Length: 495
Ligand code: BES
Ligand code: MN
Ligand code: ZN
Figure 1 (cartoon, rainbow, N blue to C red):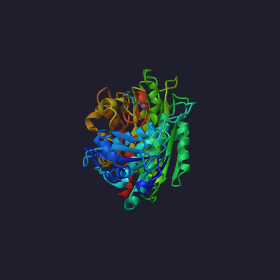
Figure 2 (figure 1 turned 90 degrees about the vertical axis):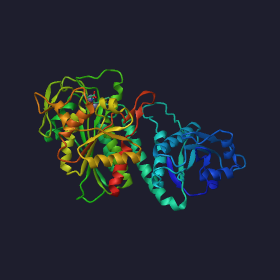
Figure 3 (figure 1 turned 60 degrees about the vertical axis):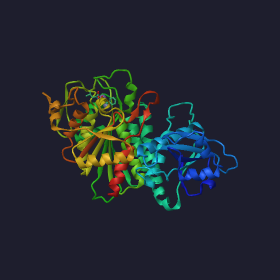
Figure 4 (figure 1 turned 180 degrees about the vertical axis):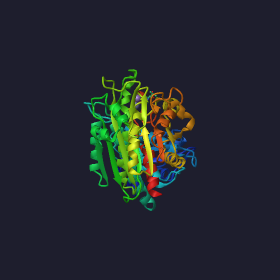
């Protein structure tokens, strides 16, 4: 897809379709007023006839305009003027792109920067247009023998007046970078587990690093992890024929002295549960258990593309979790890199077993903060559903910064408590701690487990089990929380 900024007047645009906004109760946006003039009052007539009222996400495509240079106009309902929230703006954009797709439109010009939104910066609005459109256009094709595209859209330009062009250009650049990061994350996540193995993810990380000049990569093999004492991580991969990888990406956008932000993503390329085998129904979705890792790769690619002046380390511990003669057994005790011993009471609580060693490894980078992302608990779906990602952490400022970023990015988070009292649920008679904490508060006890390995730095954990992919007929990865993380990193770079 080709995205650009356009400063020509509406009647000079060479496009299949101009997208303009209509406020609820028949209020026209400035572009709508202009198009109305250029189309012999067709818009006011359609509104008077009651064909469109301007309710949020309403659309009306005017397919032919007699005696006009304009080919088509897509009228887009926005809602009441002055009351358009970020979410409503995005909802309207989703609806616009759905119509563009189904009507087989090849090029579109979006004249929506003039629309009043709560977050009213041109940069933000430009970014959202690109993110929402690109998200809707994504289509997984890789393993289909017949490739059929559901859209003919090839180019989108965003109409800006010359005075706001610089802000729109910055929004365009960031929007493309983030949208492509999301796209990469979705693609890697949607790939089946027999293709997207730990080795495959490591190769992708190498490609990302090779195409960005401030990024380098190191892939630790099982023998390296053995030498580091990562007994917990390696106990999970022992049950798999696929060798585990610890992928470490290093983006250096600021001076070496500046402490890095470390992001760690769970990269379970398939989670069968191990000896504590999962039930068969829906088990295919456990190919998505690497979404945290894929989000780390997508975010780092976006950061490099945006050329942010911060240092970031991306760590992806990657493995499969399979049943096997050599797999972890319930009751086994393993020793983590930190020295803490862990009693594995359920081999399906494997995410925390690989993450704890990656989180210990993170210390060597002298991090400013560490953020981990993981499809960690089914309990998070029970607690929060598929709307926000779960957020837990040992630092209020970091948690608040992430929540702030999530609001700007429309990629929501909800914080859960990480109180001391919950730690008791992890007591073990045979090791320093158990890897499960019983039925109650499963998302919190999983985070409690991780917190035992993150005491030396400021840390936040995102449980993305409910948000990283959609289930059902529209099954597919969402690319979350790449939008929130990218926003957080932009904010940090600007701070
Ligand atoms: N990857 C799963 C969590 C998961 C399950 C995410 C379903 C999304 C949908 C994780 O490894 C897991 O199996 N967790 C167990 C933990 C339990 C054994 C304490 C779970 O949630 O059932
Ligand atoms: Mn599991
Ligand atoms: Zn898992």
